[in-house]
Length: 186
Image (cartoon, one colour):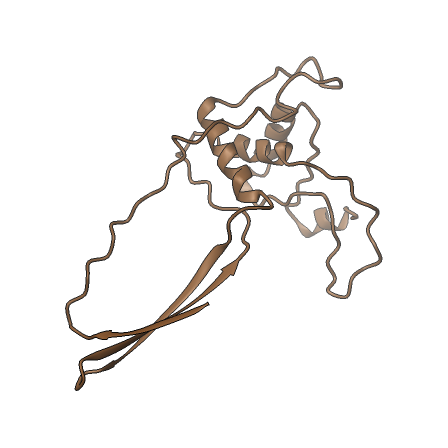
């Protein structure tokens, strides 16, 4: 959408609103992910580890960010032109909504960002898909996998955490080198 207006120009500008950091402290907690509980096939040697309430609130927020009906992100471009002799200012604004899934989970160190992310993967509905069609022109192949990018010093932590919390229900492949990529197939 495009909006515009002509207003009286003055050098004084209204103050900007104060920056407000959002919080999920009042969000309802999400349910425990399906494999963060006992299930048939869970090795008895792996204890059931569940999310804490504050982690469940973060999971609730993350699931809302990934939902099909998530509100779009609105890109806004603003421009203005001034005619000082007439003391006029033209203000124009263009807005374009974009569907953007995801977000930034910026909880404190030690809060459990890794386990919350594993919980998101586990809690995301998996709709059976038909076998992939022949390779598309753009080269993309639809897969049910989730790509997690992590610093190299955390690459060994992720498979252990996935195993520990999901009870082996989720599989994890670590790709640290080109040789690791060459060993895999779609």
